[in-house]
Structures are given as structure tokens and as C-alpha cells.
Length: 240
Image 1 (cartoon, rainbow, N blue to C red):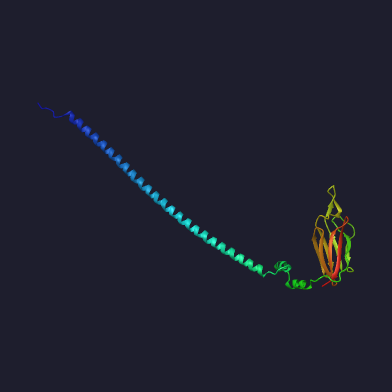
Image 2 (image 1 turned 90 degrees about the vertical axis):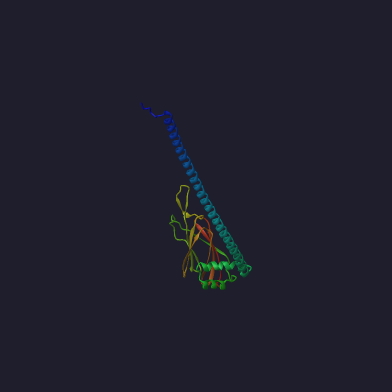
């Protein structure tokens, strides 16, 4: 009779050993995964720290460059201000004193606007105190308007060598309709006609003008007069 060598205890021992081995493998895998994760995290943190450090260094360098540029610009501005002050002082020293100081920039403005230098020189040479002037006189004329249908009105001076006429805007009545007379508060056109030609001056009254006719300078002031009329106050002096 054969006796079986099978022992149930050996089977349980084997099973326990296999379970322990499987548990150990799982534990090893977990520890390995944890370790790798830690190492990767530390490596990523180190790279992030390095990148942050590089950015900080670049920002510091940029700030230093900007500070250098600001310093350079401030120095240039101070230099320019000093030059401007020196030029202003030099300009003030070269300008004449008194009335001539005011005439110099006026003359420069005339030249900048394209005035003829010879004409300006002639006017300066001919400028002198008025001589042989007539007594002030006054005349008047009707200022025509779009609604005026009367005869042409004019002022004649120097035996017709100087003619003065005017045109304005119609006054508006309470009904909003235009009247025949002009509105002196609005711009007018005053025309001066001489043998040399015609010149028109525009603006609101009073207007002042001078014109030379037959060797005499007429100094004219045109202002509003009675309804429809403009008044011309004038005198004449030898010219030049």
C-alpha cells in the first residue's frame, strides 16, 4: 500500500510565499514610481528656478540699460537748455534798445512774408513827420446792399483822382426780410480807385487806410454814419 506524500501545509506555505512576493513587487513598483516622480519634480523645479533666474537677470540688465539711456537723455537736455539760454542772452545783447528793438522783429516778419526789401527800405527812408497837412474834413456816401436799387454813391477827392465806394450786407427787419440799408455791425467792402488802380479793403467799421495821389498822402478813416451812410474822415499831407 502506497502512502501519498502530499502535505496541505506546504500548499499554504507556497501560497503565502507567492502573495508576499506579489506584494513585494507591487511595493517595489510603487516606491520606484514615487522615486521617479520626486526626481522629475525636483528636476522640473530646478529648471523653472533657472529660467526664473535668467529672466530676473535679463530684467536687471534691461533696467540698467534704460537707466543709462535716461541719464544720457537728461544730460543732452541740460546741454540743450544751456545752449538755448546762451543763445537767448546773445540775442538779447545784440538787439538794440528802445523803439528800434520793437521795429526789428516787425521788419523781419515783413521780410518773411515776402515783402520787397527795396520797397520796405523806400518806406523807411520816406517816413518822416507829416508836412503841409490839410485840415481834417469829412464826407459821406451810401453803402450799397443787395436790396439797394438807388444810384451809385461815392466820395470824390483830389478832383476825382481818388474815388471811394462801399458795399455791405443788408440789415434784417423784425419780419426777417432784408432792408435797403446796410448793417454796420457786419463786414463791409470799401473800394479805393486811383489812376494807378483799384484797392478793396474788407472788415467791420471803422476801417483806416492811406493812399498816395498826386504827391499827397490821404489818411482816411471810414466809420458808420446815419442810416445807409458811411462817414469818411480824412486829411492829406505832402508825400514823401
